[in-house]
Amino acid sequence: VYHVYPNPATDYIFVSSAMDTEATVTFTNLAGQTVKVVNANLTTGENGVSINDLNSGVYFCTVSANGYNHTSKVVVK
Image 1 (cartoon, rainbow, N blue to C red):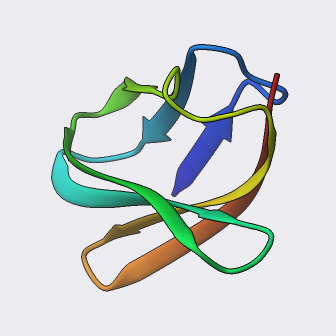
Image 2: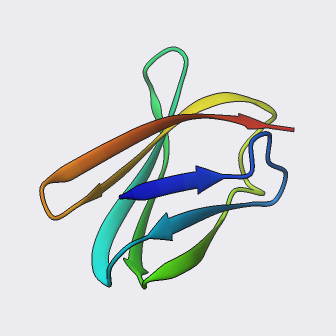
């Protein structure tokens, strides 16, 4: 189970993970273009992902790990 917060966000989002795993965090804009991909080693609990290089706007954030995908809408201020 993955939760992405806060929303809206400014410099970081946090991915809450129920297990230790390697994951890919992908940010897609509303036009469907991939704008950022982060390979992360998630640990149980809170994991920070920097988003300070994203422009203000609305993105879809997809966390992919262990054959599971979770997509959340994230607003960047």
